[in-house]
Length: 170
Image 1 (cartoon, rainbow, N blue to C red):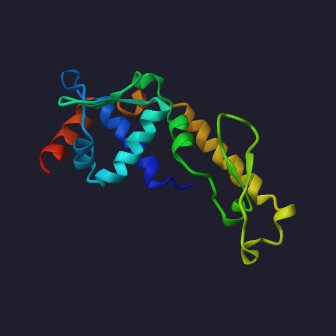
Image 2 (cartoon, rainbow, N blue to C red; image 1 turned 90 degrees about the vertical axis):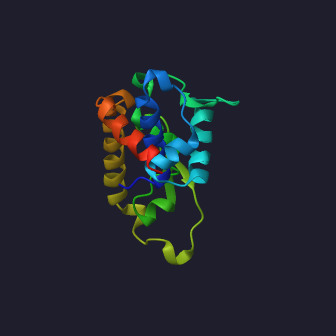
């Protein structure tokens, strides 16, 4: 399974916001982009979505910025991934009837996507491989559901020292 850069950057943004010392409760998009050396415009889109979902809040004005909207203990990694990944297509035949995995449902929610005839696999109607891949994806998400943002930033002082250095060196 491979996550998109979008999900990776979303998780890293949340990590950044979780480790900011209390006296510096607001961060800017530029701070985060510089710390991770990622595109500011791409990060803006991610931050907009994270704010819409309710993971972060944006404060406007001269001294504005962004911060977590809820405690790190309440942000479940599996939920973040489900919100930021467009699909979980592991193999091309998933796209014939791909699955958008929302919530913790035991069954995929099929979303029909038109395919070119050359891309249609002949054994799809009887293939058991998709079921195995689906189970593997569910197992991955189940593990991610067992971790919160707080779990992955338990070493917050070490993380902040690195991020603060990266931010100031750009």
